[in-house]
Length: 427
Ligand SMILES: [Zn+2]
Image (cartoon, rainbow, N blue to C red; front, side, top):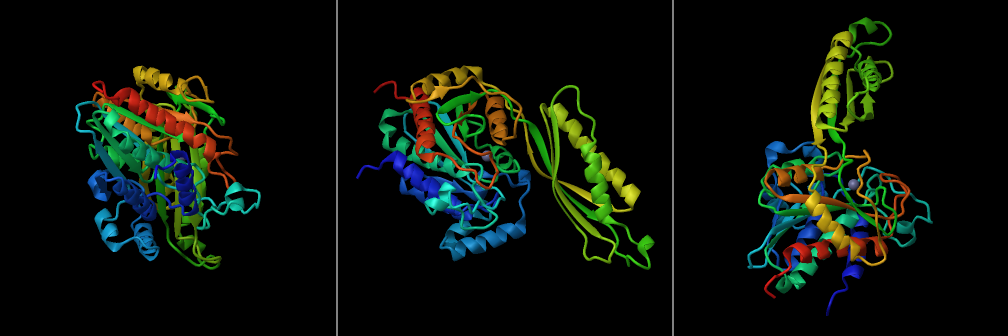
């Protein structure tokens, strides 16, 4: 029986939405993806095969171990978990056997640490596919990205006789916190790629709108900071303590005061701060998760240097010891204008859509920029697209997408692009 691509795609997206997993812990998701791709008779590599482990950032060994145990309990075979060697992500290759370009499509798979809304009007609640893991939610639409990636893979397999060259279908872990692309790109995975295409649902694109991004990604560095002080009795000997909580608070305030940069937009955020052991003990430990961003590599570097200086200063002032660990990093978007023309040509053929002008407003960060940089540095071309939906804001509890309309638009762009750049000329 012939599969209905759109119906399957929506089904997959909802299945994935139901069981979200955070970055570097996507073992159930990777298993789902790999089963699907191997079901299409595609060769698939997983885990370390696609990852340069020297370049891995923001991966917590304890979370990974817990996630592997959870996956096993939920039916993922031990043999598969062994095959991953503790690293999520998968890559399938489709070789048509005919000479032609190497084209890569990339989808990210991780969720956000948000508790999904329990509003009965929220569609995933209404239809029963809301997250069953409190505190974890596909609130950025990466469930949609993976669903599109898998159904595009099926289309490629079923249309391989019309195609030439090779395809690499990349399913990337840990996009949130810009962590996963760096280690995958550093493995050399995309060094032979001629054309690279990836995208994001939503953003500034409304339902029915599609477009190419030619800028707008902020370079960004994420940090985990551990501050170690010294505990003491808060009543009779506070002078003997070294207060890690106060040091963390002072650093947080100072970070907000980094002077703006004249050459471009900057951002700074302290997202979490946990400190202290007990009410009447001088706090001996603090931990912050924070980030900086910049419109250019240089401006981000300026922010990054300030982070190290501020914690060094606080160490001295509060007699504590800060350890600043890089937990993620991404870059700005390098451009391939010639490829944008091709992508936009394909977009014009997608029914019931409006093509928006190329998007370059500084907004978030996207670690796909690291894949794109690597492709372009090796002589290939790359583009990042938006396929719109109406939403209440990414990373929010009531984030939702119109999967039945939006996902087919993405599918048509990816498959149209495949035909355009890898279409068989001799057929
Ligand atoms: Zn996202």
